[in-house]
Length: 363
Ligand code: AMP
Image (cartoon, rainbow, N blue to C red; front, side):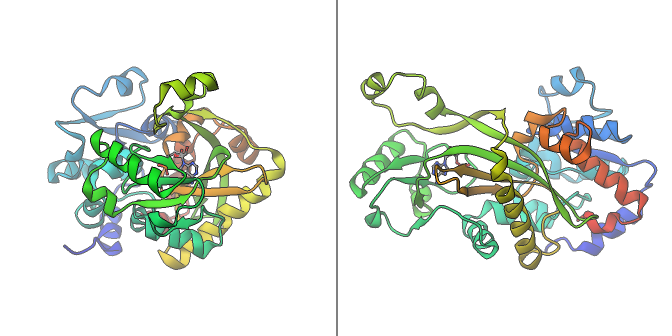
């Protein structure tokens, strides 16, 4: 199936009444602050929500229109797309939107105008593309171990797809690697197919910081919007068990994300943070034009050499943005007001309308 071309989206956008734009997305992930921010900037909002999941959107009073579907993936159905376009909708993508709509569908059949670069989403989903972008950008990433037989230190073992850390494990030798693969298969956390796509990398011993940036296509600049760290089961639960009892538990830690904490970094590390944002956005411009556009997140571990090591990225709003629905220390420094990521996105749309440059930021 052929890819949606830019002209098709531009034509749909041309037919929109710019005085009556709706901000729409799937009711999940980081949509609450997107809706809240959109309303604060004067837009109407529409949620596409799975039946039975509408309560938060009603109770927080952030949505004007409810498009209720049997299942989230119905967002790509023709009738839903038509309803969205009738509302002059611009869709704000987030992790659940990408997961439920499906990357292939977003690239080929979902032609509702979207904020951001729809082509860049694949670069976060496919590990080889993601690594290529980070290597091109010259960013410090964990070293890759090309074969299980070459494990000669502590490594992190990962499997394909966004799985919230499920099935990941740590190993220190080739034998331990094979042993743990067996265990994960028995638990049914991984399948034969996953093993073909296994990715083994240096285990970075450090503290977790997920850095949320906003790239303004209108200003050609990345802004540091906030930071969170992940709260993961069972690894974080295990740290609450005294060391001698941890051995008795004999469980392998898992890295299933369950929540996020807001955090800040040592001020002396911020130069690295800005450099990472600038390097990745510069690299992306060449690799997948027009590059980043809107929110993105670099997931990092900071070791005791004070290196900020990037192990993952999100090329759209990341769930950790929920830690600063009323602004973060960084978004406050930048904008002098408590700005959420959602509101920053809505403001970019508002400025795009004002400057008659929506075409530059919508795909
Ligand atoms: P991911 O699915 O890549 O976001 O990883 C899930 C979790 O695994 C992260 O939040 C970290 O806690 C941990 N992790 C991922 N990569 C590494 C690494 N190279 N070294 C140490 N921990 C890691």
